[in-house]
Length: 147
Image (cartoon, rainbow, N blue to C red; front, side):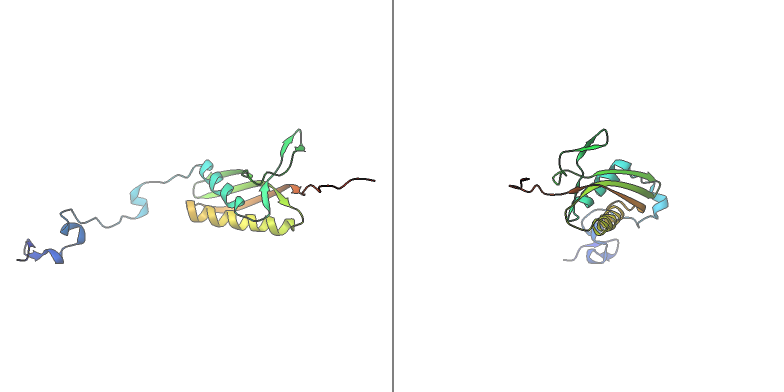
């Protein structure tokens, strides 16, 4: 026995209707669905994770009155600020670079990674990524002494 609906076989009906539900409506154009706003803090979080993915980039040491206190913090997130204006964002990153890696190359890798990840994950176009390298992470030399 073959089941029919309104003169059609169930196998001819859309999949949703065959399961007893209604067929899903055609997707509407984006402007008809409503608006989407991405908060600055969302872009900051995505950018922070992007910086952490770049080899030889780390969170800069804390600063007190403009003086670095301690070492670079690879386990922490780099300092990131973002400003979102509609569908575009500008991003500022402060970080440390591990010695002896080229600062310019690491900064460019950070720019590229931040831009790609923010645009891919949030859909916000990144117009500028400013990178400030505030410190070089030089490993301590164990056993070195002045004679």
